Image 1 (cartoon, rainbow, N blue to C red):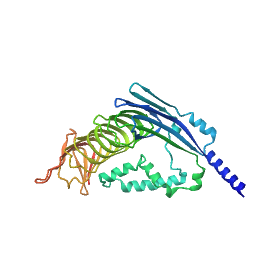
Image 2: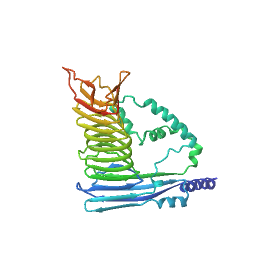
Image 3: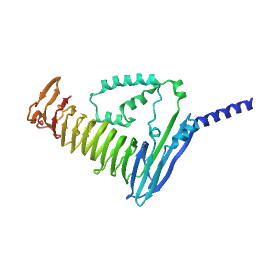
Image 4: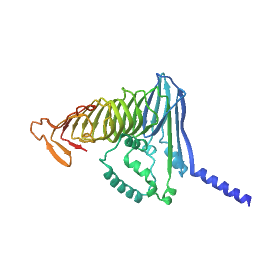
Length: 376
């Protein structure tokens, strides 16, 4: 009987080894100091950034192939191109992967299941869209987000739609790229079709220029941060300084923000709490501004073809001056139109004065042309 059992165990181990293989793509470390800059040039890659505590940058990139035939795995690995080097005080990482290599991990749903899941997501999204959020609830959304809202919904609910028989037949790649970085160095990012997740608070300057990227941060704390994001996702639990250009970004979610400027175009922006000295310039976006904190002093927004949603502005003691042209105001279940004239002159849409003998927060100034203002 024992030889028979050993034969089964051997067969089982052989089956497992053939069904799953791991390839090390890059494993390298560089000694650095506070003057070092990490320079990233990325295409089609997903990276998780963690804090390093030993004055080194560590690159650890691997892929685990599940149920992949050998020839298909070899063909795919030909599309992986990675280089790393240190020159002076600059550490360079260059990743140029094929589109298929860089594709996000799918929830492994059949086409029929996927159609049902997307239909249910659309109903869910329509029901939840526009509802008030606290700062903490938006931060929790960011913490557990996988990028886009549809991606998060599919992964969080895949158990409802999964078909075990379908999953067992699917080939998959588990990609893991972790970069460990000391907090004290600056980072420059140029990225296409890439997903970057930072699991530590970034104190030093980040300069980022991305296209169709997924960027997720805990805290961005440098006043010198400069971001230019075109298409994709952008999610940050807290921002304290910097300039951010967001074009075609859906969603852009920020838990709290202060001392910053945002230039926005054709995007969806949700902010849990606005602090001191925040300015937003927008063209044709949807903005959901849920709360203002006690340190808020002055908030300026200029929008053209924007849909602006304010929450709980009536209850709080701050002043508000809103001017517009050809703009619709929805407030207290009443719809009003303002400023349709050939001269395109701005007129006062709404004014809210501070309450006397109560702690005063600050002032909101808005100029809205050809837009929609929802007071909720």
